[in-house]
Image (cartoon, rainbow, N blue to C red; front, side):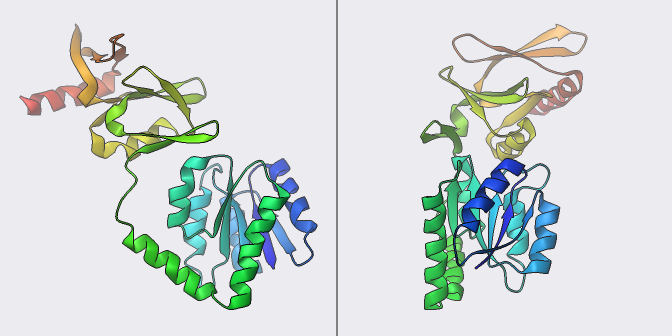
Length: 254
C-alpha cells in the first residue's frame, strides 16, 4: 500500500512516517508540507492513500481532499488532525477515516486494516459510491458550531452566540450566558459561516449577533457603539467604516 504523508508540521510528519515505516506492507512514497506540494506529488506518484492534515496554512487539507477526489483514480483519504470539529466536513470529502493527534500506532493500524479489507474484497468502488450516496441523502446540514472542549465537542447554536472576538492570537466565542470558548477559526471564517444568521462585522476583530444587540449608542461624529443584551451589557465599538454600513442598515430598517 503506497502512502503519502501530508502535514505542515515537520515533527508530526516525521513521527507518522516512522509509524508507517514499521508496517511491512506499507511503502511511503514521500512527504508533503503544504497543499501545493501534496497535489503535485499525488498527481505524479499516485499513492493509494493520503494521510492528510486538515489545518494547514493557506489551502486546507479539506480543500486538498476535494481536489484529489476529482482525479481519475483518487487515493483514499485518512484525515489526521488535533481538532474534532471537522468530522462532518471530512465525511463530506469522502474520507475513509479520521485520526486524532497525537498519533497512536494502533489507531493508524486500524485505518490500514480497513483499507486492506476494502482492497481484498474489491469493494473500493462500491464504498466510494456508498459514501457519495450517503452524502447526497443527508437530511440535514450542521447548523450548530462545533467547539472542541477537552474530550468532548460542544455544539453551539448561532442564536446562542453573543459575539465572536479576536484577542491576541486567539479567537473566542462569547455565548448568551457569558461563557467563552477559544476556537480554531479566524473571525473572517466565522463571519462567512454565520452570515445567514444576522451577524454583523463591528470592527476588524469582532462580529456580533444583531439579534442580541440591546441598544445602539450614537457618540457623535458618526461614531457608534453596540450594547449587547448580556448581563454585563458588553459594549462593542464600531470601526469608522462599519459605522457607515450600520447607518445604511438603520436607514433601510425604518
